[in-house]
Image 1 (tube, rainbow, N blue to C red):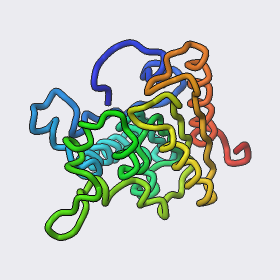
Image 2: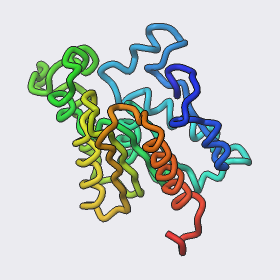
Image 3: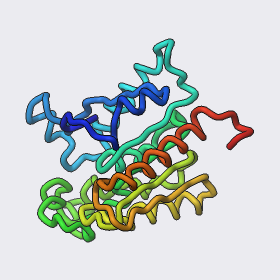
Length: 226
């Protein structure tokens, strides 16, 4: 779901709808508009109730007659990218295609890579090497998407800007490599001159073309054309 409303040629729901897709964008835990308790419930629990919010909304809408539940895809950027990587190992075959843009694949790796050094301690709880009384790491680290790769079974497109210092592009490289080592169909699109956003118009065109070609390939085309 969008944290703010503005026009963009990147994550544009109208463009997605114009390409014959139904968009489900749940206002899950961690998004503003429902009070501070709702907003902060995501902190320290990236894989908890917020993921159930996604799945509950999708399962509910999938019962509508205009939804083909055999052709569902999941796409997202930033935390949405993390969500895609996590759902890839926890979706119970709901989805037929994934696209992750600038997402966190390995939370332990993310902790020591990001330039936003204050945020992980506040939002993740503490460093991964600091254990609790039971000798366990924080939940954010013990439920990291990379720990569920053994359950990945769906084609995935990984996109990342190589000037993204908030979430390093090595996250996408690692996810792509893991998918290929699992024998899955996967693609990696890196932008050497982009950061956490794709801002240059020519890059935006490439982004859109790659984005929709991937979705169309797995959600629209017949198996013989894949």
